[in-house]
Amino acid sequence: MMRFVKRAAVVVLVVGVAAFVAFLYFVPPLLSMSPEAFSGPQNGAAPAVNDIADPAERLIAERGRYIVVTSGCIGCHHIATPQGPDFSRYLAGGLKFQTRQGTYVSRNLTPDQTTGLGRRSDAEVKRVLRSGVFPDGHVVPHRVMPWAGYAVWSEEDLHAVVVYLRHLSPVAHAIPDPAPASPLSTPDAVQDVYGGRDYGTLR
Image 1 (cartoon, rainbow, N blue to C red):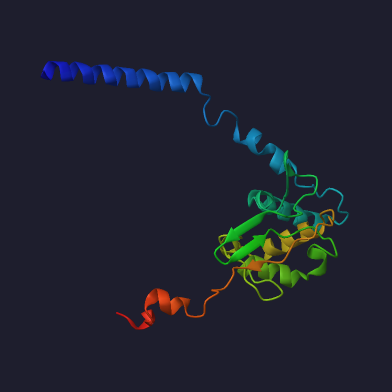
Image 2 (image 1 turned 120 degrees about the vertical axis):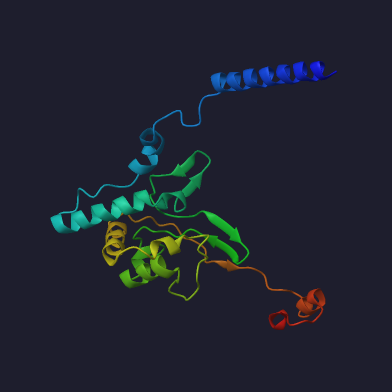
């Protein structure tokens, strides 16, 4: 009986190894292309800054472009289409995020005067990047916008990003304001659920 079990275990092991080898042979590897080729279309979508006449400002904007690209801003701030992200309207925003705090839509980062950053000052833009606090006072959750990671950027990097965004082509793309989560409809719901206890006082 033990000999049969051992033989069966060996057969199962051999079949498992053979199946795994076949899987590796017939299924293409996860990284079947170089990182440069994989991220090329997204990185190449960022408009260049060669048309900026002032050499000093051009260098600052180039630094901002590098930060915007490596931070993956286009991953959230793009217009989605059935064919994929619309890179021709770079950073025009529009992706929706539903959280416990409410519904948020990625903002239009182009310098459009009506729907984008053209209506905001540099200080207002930098405050959002540092702390997630918008001009109207609402705070976007850091899980929606990773501003906690941008908070460590130097003042020079923040300035470079703003300079680059100011030089993008303006795109008129209206973004709805955040919609907060619905409050409890029943005033006594908390007391009903938690038995009227003040859980902040329990030890």
